Length: 153
Image (cartoon, rainbow, N blue to C red; front, side, top):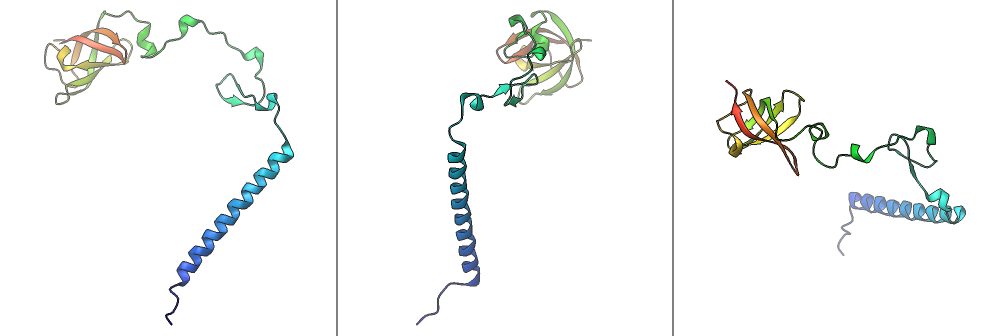
């Protein structure tokens, strides 16, 4: 008769596997037992609240720390720093990054310090990094965009 192919390593693996399986069963039984001991949760125990910092907490937040927010202060999408400024105004800035192969780059606005997207089709002249430029600021669904980009000489 041939000798069994069970090696020491295979036996140890099988033992570990059985221990994990047993531990999992014990944890499941413990959870079931705890669930039956607790009984059904009341509505108050199921509710969660947000505190003044936006963290989820189980107790009601202090009403004195409540802050009123006006609807016109809420900005959906885009960069809130640029949303308050008027569009289609000529601005100045410095080219932070521009990739001629990809055809786009970014301009740092000298007034607000925000990054504005610039496409090569909207540039009248060839621009490179660290060039000072003037441009017209517009907005699209993705955010602020520079058009009519010209070098400042």
